[in-house]
Length: 301
Image 1 (cartoon, rainbow, N blue to C red):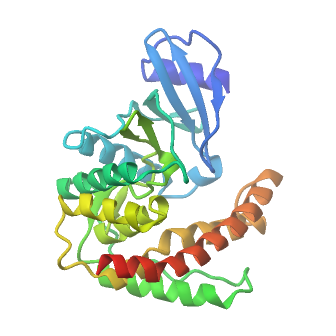
Image 2 (cartoon, one colour):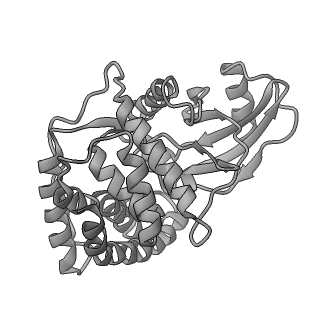
Image 3 (tube, rainbow, N blue to C red):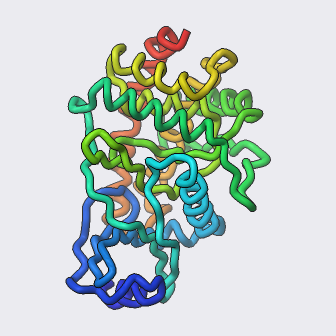
């Protein structure tokens, strides 16, 4: 890997490495390294080779890069990028190294939630456009749940698709994966990282997802909703559709990990073991979210 990282630094003109790259923990699918060169310190993400075999994978990565660059012009809280590059068949995303630490429950406060509400509202209000990046013309198909003996998955999937169908008319370019692990805090200033999933999304749906990730009580949820509402008009929001569609990301992750657990995705024993663990965790998250939907609906009015 060191030889490829050296070639990557030359390709992107980052300077010669001054110390050996250091692995960094973080993501579920990709490998991350801290790379120090004569020109600075960089976060280098080695993209999962199985993911990159998919026909649209590279375009999605490049679209995410362009979305981050476009938003950086109007939302100064976004992380910048150095580029997406290929070296000897391996793909990498490079960011300037961002100091900061993620914050997770129960350390997340109402102030964190307020700031994240403002951040997401600013992104959505910017309503940026990226050349060549368009909303998907059709909804995804229903997932095949034959690998899981759980009737709830059919119900949840049908509800998510019905919600997505109702939300299709209102779409903005956004981050789409603002899990707390993808936000580094510099004091009370957030730096958004990991833009590979960036693309079009319904703004109400992403607000629901943000509430689910960050706000574990009413005070935090109200702080986030109020802050977001200073940037985006919520009067016409279809909350029932957004709440149902809020399961979509979790369902997609669950389906992918069912395939990993069955040995149909990935190429190693580690993939299978990780898939099994993520299946269990994601099912618990879906159960938790279904319970929270009543609470969220009441807050949203």
